[in-house]
Image (cartoon, rainbow, N blue to C red; front, side):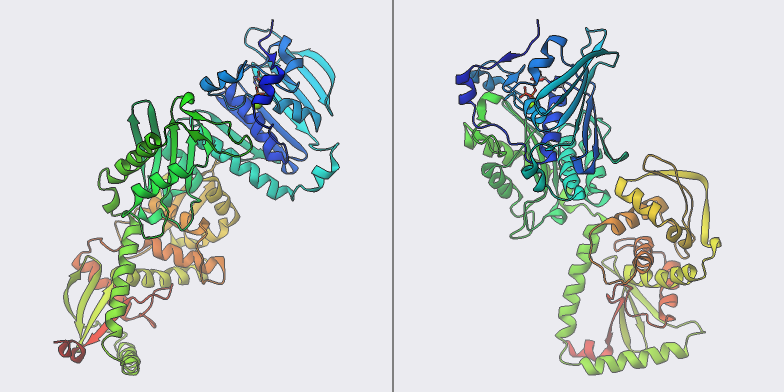
Length: 573
Ligand code: ADP
Ligand code: MG
């Protein structure tokens, strides 16, 4: 005797309107949710033609008993609840018993399934709502459902589908979210035979955030781990650098179900208040676990909305969970590179403001710059005599030279020097700009980063990276660009930073990808604000910079050096 029963009419009507299957991603969702409900630890999703050609979901879950196969494909057939009250204790993703029936009605389906008790499994073919064949097959425990030609018999529906890549994008976004909600399940998503996303199911949210969002995001998040009474909240929050104008980086799961909820959003806003800029929305991914009887998921079957029975309780829990994470450690004060950059920008703006308030001396200013360039030209081949005053904020090198005070941004200056050097190396395409590592490093990348390297392999080699694809999003790196004037550089970090920047959606003024790449390597290899420099390093930096043709801006156009002449400073008081 199988486990699946038909729900009675009343129950059917009590459960609000059925799910609508209107695009491939809905079918993917139903199939994958069935796999999750079946206790699968591995789920493979294969897509062809944006899901219009094929959607195949294979899991290692419980499988379906022989006696249950036919009924599983009938409308309102479910093994998950018996009556509407059962919803109070239901943690499964599905319970309406409609998905398989709907999918079978509008596609050509093949299902192979086997439970652990059965020796042989079953293979069922069905199309347009009819079961065509059933046979015994030998197969692994679990279920594999292949849905072909979705909407083949509903041409109107088919007509409204978007292009394959768009439909696939919806699928990918959904699968990534499912993987984020189910950290202990290993997901693999394949498109046209190629793996485009995979998770390892190791349960670590930080690893997942890294592979979904990349290094920059991962470095600016903090774990949430909160429990009060019967509410448990886990996840991550982002610091001020990740705050955004929209709520697009706010993900909420309630017992693994993705939801949208105003109460949770305002609790989060309250918690982030003062930690992020005015009008900005904080970054968070939260997983709320609480008893199913404390909320109702059935208000809007097609929307991701729920109704909490005790709204102030959930508000307080979310607020405390996020606030605690934000205040943990020195998270907000953490001196990550981006924060330095931010601080740098801040300082720069301050200086910009000050400079403008020295009066309308723009012309005098450019005159001065011109004469300085001439001076530098003349002095090109001999040591420049300057007086080293000190380093301000671990960021600005202050020197005195010819009745001028120079404030030299150590990062921008070094970046400028490296840019010239790397560009020259790149132009003459010499392989000897690479410095071999003793032992090749295996560097694991996100899929996007890996693809980028493969596509631009030659560009990386020209600059001195000695790279070899090593499969599974891993690069074997045997050499790094040979860059002068800096001993302490962490090449691996630099490589990852460069990739992060190059694959991000940052707008840039560079005309070609090569130009942007050279500037990015220069930027990432350069000393940062806040780093201690030795006297020798400072001297090299100054000598080098002052001998450049155009030492006054970095490759991105920001000033490397701000100058004040003696009169300006004396007139200050
Ligand atoms: P629901 O998920 O709402 O119960 P579905 O139509 O999605 O309804 O599935 C019907 C039934 O088929 C499920 O209740 C479950 O017993 C069985 N089933 C579907 N997919 C799987 C699967 N991948 N592994 C095990 N059982 C499954
Ligand atoms: Mg289901």
